[in-house]
Image 1 (cartoon, chains in turn yellow, red):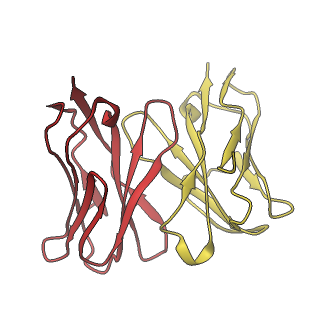
Image 2 (cartoon, helix red, strand yellow):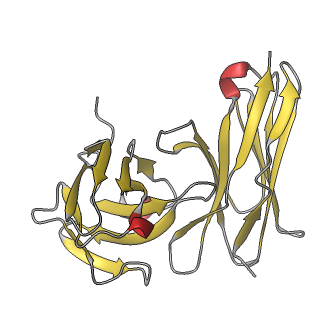
Image 3 (cartoon, chains in turn purple, cyan):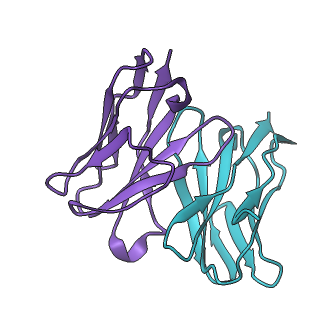
Length: 114
Length: 110
């Protein structure tokens, strides 16, 4: 399967713990995006990378959130000191730079903070 | 005003009916319009995109953009139970970001 993959698919954690999610984009896509989706809402942009450079972060991305893409391939999203409000689906997508309108999504990581 | 607005539904139609899903957007400068389908607990799947105005057809699906009224539509012909999902409209805004509507939950009744 050459689509976008995410790991883990589900994560349950206690408030205050740190969590890390991984995304592997489509191999020829050098843009990688992170979104958050809550129930009844569309995905909301968090941040994106072009190759290893993080080009933009949404104001939704508090200081407790950090994302990396060290070698321009896979990316990680870490949430420190999780809060119940962080419970959501975290989605990763990838595209080629010239076609940011054509993003392909992974299956998402569903985070539940108890 | 939100950049894209979508009625969340739910919308229930009998199998075989034509489905019409709609969104409005705020800025006439937007050029790219997309429709994504999302099954429960899955990631969104790009169905189709259109550039500027007009229609685009792919099998049973037709996307339509009316720039004069800032209205985008997705039509599904001969709807099937497997079409039951949430349909998200989206635009690319001036910052080159995809902005999604809330999604419309569609149920096709066998």
